[in-house]
Length: 184
Image 1 (spheres, rainbow, N blue to C red):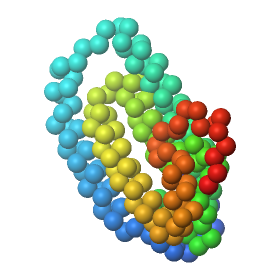
Image 2 (cartoon, one colour):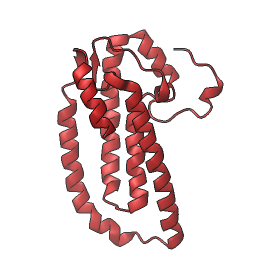
Image 3 (tube, rainbow, N blue to C red):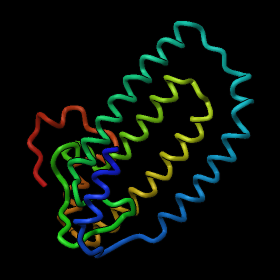
Image 4 (cartoon, rainbow, N blue to C red):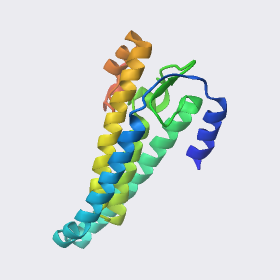
């Protein structure tokens, strides 16, 4: 619901696209097709091999619930922080600035990190093993999309974005980063 509301807000207030990747929708469609076929083929074979005891089932559920909640919170925080700068395709909008606050202070792609965390959490909670290839494929697609975004942002912002990339990790935060003042 938050994505829908903020997406409509971005659509009505968003600026003109200055730079954009046209390759992303094709890649996402092909990746989705691969995931669907691979998932159908692997589900019954994986279920026949894996048997978990009660302790591991409870551990998987608890860990999954934690990852699901943290991933959801991270993705929503990042989306709200972006506001009208958010776009479903990699692009630079007119008036675009490099986001360096909120979760973007700690990682460059917190929405992707949050979504992958939610998928891993769902896997732990449901033990629906079809999510293994789904999660792996979505992670690969987001990694490719992140590289595409970074190329567009590097072209648009040059040295400023290079300094941000050097200081802030792509997907996982540096644990002790808050102790040091980081300048971009």
